[in-house]
Length: 249
Ligand code: 13P
Image 1 (cartoon, rainbow, N blue to C red):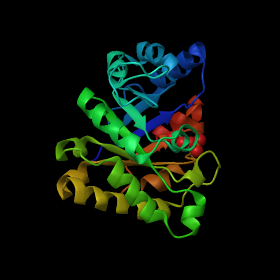
Image 2 (cartoon, rainbow, N blue to C red):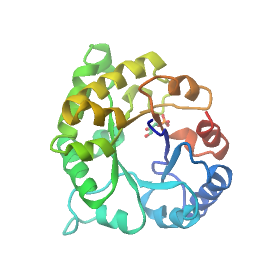
Image 3 (cartoon, protein in one colour):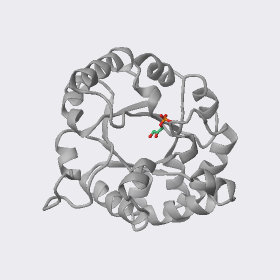
Image 4 (cartoon, rainbow, N blue to C red):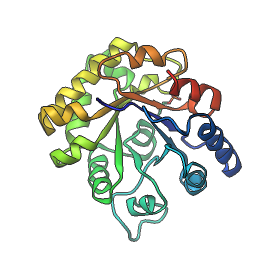
C-alpha cells in the first residue's frame, strides 16, 4: 500500500569528500532496494556531488530547506527551481531546528509547500510538539495547528503526494525516542486531519514518517505501527552501518 520511506537528514554535517564517501557506501549497500524508498538529504553544498554518486541507483535526493520564491533578491537563499535543477526529488520543510533557530513558522512552511509542489518537488513537512507542550497536554492542538496551517490551500491531488514527518522536538538528538504507541497516537491523528483536508482516500496514500532518535534498535517497533510509514533519521544516518541497519529494519 504505502511504500515506506527511510530518509537521512544529514543536517549541517559532511564535507564534500565525506559526503561522497558516505553516499557511495549507502549506494553500494542498498542502492538497488525497491520495496522502500531511500532519500538522502545532505547540505546544499554537496547536493550535486551526492547526486552524481547516487545517479544510477534507486536512492532519491532531498534538500533540507528552501525559499518560497522562485528567484529574486533574497541573499543567501536557495529556491525550489534550483533544487529541482540539480536533481532533487524531495525537500524537508519546517524542521523544528528551522522553526527554533531561523524563525520558520507554519505560514512560511505553507508558502514553501505550495511552491515545492508547483515546481515538482515533494515536500516532507515536519511537525512536532515541544516537551513543555506535551507536558501541558497540548500535543494534539499544536499538531493540528501545524498541519492545518502548514498544508492549507494545497489541492487534494497535491495532498495525496505529500510526505509528513512527525518529529517530537523532545526526541530529536536527545536519545529519547517516542514510544511506538505515542508515535502511533499522534500519527493516527495526523492522518485523520489529512482526511478532513484532502479526502479519506487520499489521506490513506500519504506517507507519515516518524523522526527523533531513530536507531537500529528501535526502528522495527516504530515501523510496526499502522500509521508509521517510515523514518526521518538524523544522527544515525551519518554512519553507514547504522543507517543501513535502519533501512533493513
Ligand atoms: P536525530 O535522529 O538525530 O534525533 O534527528 C532527528 C531529526 O531531526 C531528523 O530530521
